[in-house]
Image 1 (tube, rainbow over the protein chains, first blue to last red):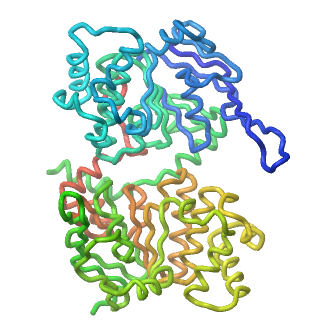
Image 2 (spheres, one colour):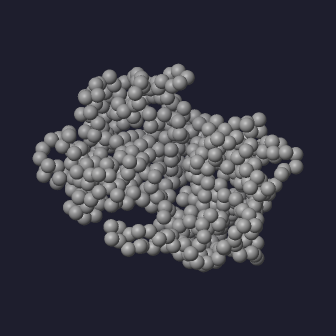
Length: 275
Length: 272
């Protein structure tokens, strides 16, 4: 039994069509998508804008209800979960969003932000909130002395670390990262990716890592699902998808990624090793 | 006097802030030749966009600029707003990151290209209309004769960026400044736009300054590279030299941080 099982999930959005007298139009954002996530692994979902990757993530996180299909967690059907069952699910599944600043309440201190999931779950940490927040801040590489500061007093990379600390507060089994490093500068991005991988090694939880950047996905994932127009067109191990892509769209996508001139790059690395 | 099309010497930009004046660009020098693409790369806050805005005289109010900016030997720094207006869009054009916010949603794309053209070149509306259709055709908009009368929202993101490029090139400028022109685009669309820019450049001989945070993009389009960090030009050389033999620690760190898509990934460091 897998940790998370998404079975034949479809999500339709109803919108008004073009024009004044238009009929309702149905847009299928996610079309019959199935996958599972094992405990401790990282499944990446990649795709371009409009591919349905974020909608899929939101359904997996139960932030959206699917039009059809089921989502099971730990063998339990949570597709229409509510009340206590949903609360239990949220205790196990947390989300890290793209823009750290818009997902952190600017009027709350870091301590209050990080311990908010505990408040919602009615958990009182042994040793008190302050100590709990400070310990988590240390784990994600933030200075614990800054626990009374506000989000605006942190840089983008630091703010994303706050979001990660908040996700880890309830000790989840699954963390869903929706473009979690996309807004960060490349050197900061590398550090946050390192952090995400270290935290997984330490705690053994799973990631669903949503991203448009294939090179980033390659760093962090064990399995990769490629989405296009609402469907998963290819799902396989990271090495298979990147080295021997089977689907034409995957091939197009991989070919389009800009690369640093490999000859120059090789020269630089040889020189670096020689130093 | 060299043959260089565009020369920037000791450019310093100072912005007033609540905590006193801050140098956001410090003593930056570079040249761009005809047919040449200079890539300016840096992370957020490095001063790369401020450098471009300084070139066009579009800095925020209160900004102070010193140094020298010369196009074809003519000094641009210190020129009046009116003089600069005849330079912008005419001799030096710019393409920005977000085409939707650069295009006016109330006017057809054709009208916007015509307006740009006539502001600098004059002539009849009919002639300008023909120029607009030709410009759209050149950047690969299908059925340009019909599409010229469409509004910005009727185009995809990639097509809108093509329209911005058409508008930037309609007066055949000597220099094109592209500030993160592909950053908001999907990777497959980005590849098409980069190809288009390179192709247009080789046919028109326009010099280009390409500003981006993405080193891989720079590697595929620029002949020369300027690396900026906190307002300083920390490295300046040919693309080959900067990528294969970087001199500055910051460039090295940056190159190490870029995730690669092709090389061997040591699997033990990845799989938890």
